[in-house]
Image 1 (cartoon, helix red, strand yellow):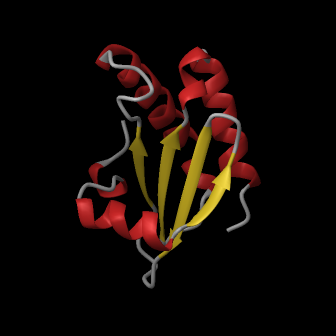
Image 2: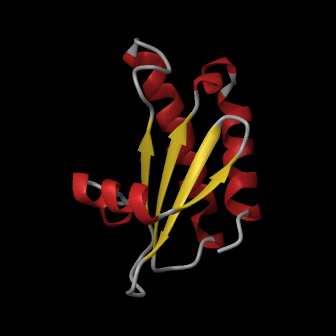
Length: 112
């Protein structure tokens, strides 16, 4: 689990990242990056819609894999950003290892 200070919580925070964030796409995940004006800790949010799968068990498995990947690789991300990961429908066919590998490559190869 990510520390509470590193998680986007409010609807307004999600909306700001959606509206003003830069898009970076991979096969199964869209990353939106919003550069804040401060130098505080980078915060992360995850959206796994019911369109992905109606069953919460499967959505939570994806969310946990994404969360763990960010936790392991957040040292490579500069401070002062809000990041929002949005799962695409094709992610449901991926294993946890494949999701974590894709997340890592997305975090490491994104130009900030």
